[in-house]
Image: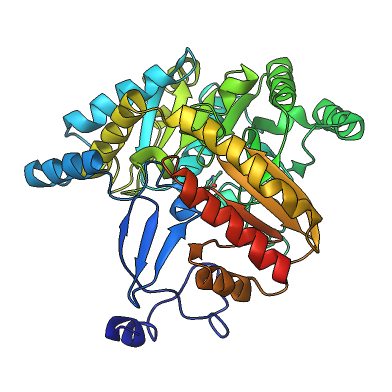
Length: 418
Ligand code: PMP
């Protein structure tokens, strides 16, 4: 074990971990493509793209080069009162990738904060128009939008620990996604009585990620759009997980052919190299903030807003989406995942196998010991990190066929041996 791990272990507090029982994390010394190199000499094929960020694989030379050049010229300047080319160019490019009308980009430094800003925009746009009492966001069970206090309140109640934090969290309605006759009826009835209290509806389009990798049909999103139009609500699509090719199109909303009023992006925005997020709002919402009254401005501005190296990485990542066949690669991964994960259906305790774009999910009845399972994957030479009751793959879109076969083979062998 490296000295830095032995000593630092007494001082580091890990994410989502019960520190009394948490196993030591695997010490990583470098990465390349879809490979993670450990301090003990082991090499793992990465099945997660580091929480779904490294869409081009690790250390892509083009991103490295652009970030290095930006570091040399200017790592960071404050975004209030000063402008730099990377951010202004990135905003223009992102707006060009959005549905017509979504053209205003607010940069932040994490996904949770991008969602906080989306909530603020949706609610304040009402206040600026003199509409009081519309300060609730309708969210859905199985959803996940972040770990900050505001976003926890619109996560699935279990994920957001609503009952534990009662009194701290703002209260927002969380109901079932309208996907079958019963949930559609409940959704319609809910809006009929409560729409007047709402500012917006929020969902992750097509795939609810951290809440359990749960898929839904594009028709669900069209239904949300119709309801939002009918009741005059903003529709927010949180594409922090689904954006940048993950579901088989550049963005998930494209498969439903509906445009939301706000989109949040992060994770693969910088190709997984640096923290950066964006909240992209419609021209109509933006215009609700234009006023002679200073209080109508959007009062938000993180210190590291639009960090120049993060924006350089994001511009380089967009270059790669333009010059390399990323979205087609997601399609190839989808076909391979479908073929190679299919036989997991017959394994003990497996209740579902599902694939959407470059996302492969094997759902178990229960995972009693996720850390133990993770350890067995490491023994097989792969980095797969189960959560809840799912074992999933979200590899880099550049992963080779052989590497992907190593991942699916390890899942079949580890789950088969349980
Ligand atoms: N929204 C979605 C859909 C996410 O998947 C995540 C992160 N898992 C977030 C928001 C929060 O992003 P961050 O962890 O960068 O705050």
